[in-house]
Image (cartoon, rainbow, N blue to C red; front, side, top):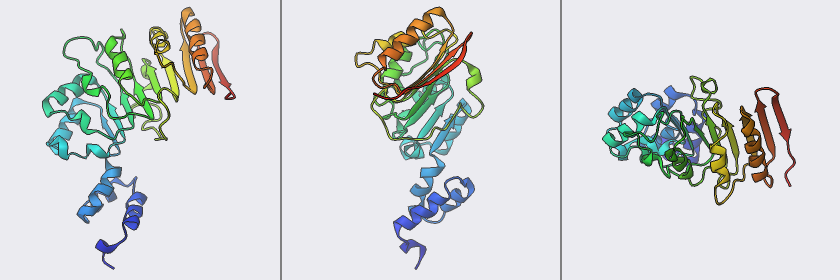
Length: 261
């Protein structure tokens, strides 16, 4: 039996077996045209644009956004919206070519997203992001930041941090994340660790008309008013909350495993 007559299921099994062997996957691309989509599912599953140079390399390799392998990407890391949206304007809507992303991390929203030249609109409603989204929010928080988060219609897990110690050279803890089955919006985990305190992000979440339904909360309390905001978040999720981690500067770390109702 020739390789062209092998059952599709067997070909899938062969390529899937090599999912973490990049050199072997590149060789598989040369076997047959039918092997290219199978290998690209793994080669481009996790894409990271840490610098503008990374994006420029992507543009040079795939000058036509419509013909790029962006459709195979499941987890996407963007180092800064400054260079990401700038390249997007030059390259012709490259961001929305990543149409199947289920986990998004934006490390730096540009410092002051409301200033001229920083445009977060290309990320609004980005794909149908579900699963896990890391967002490092700058100070001060702006309407564009909240609008960006609200525009992700299936957002399940949300992490908002400004402590750089939590973001390592590999693009953050647990990155790339394990893709899980999508849950209802705002029904996964919420992590708020900001040196400026929980306000105003917590207040914004509490003001959402559909409420919040997180199953896990991780909160760092740095100011006296954070205690009241944390209490309000717990009460807001009381019907779904299963796990609560509270980090207090003076009292240490508390972990509560809650039994669901």
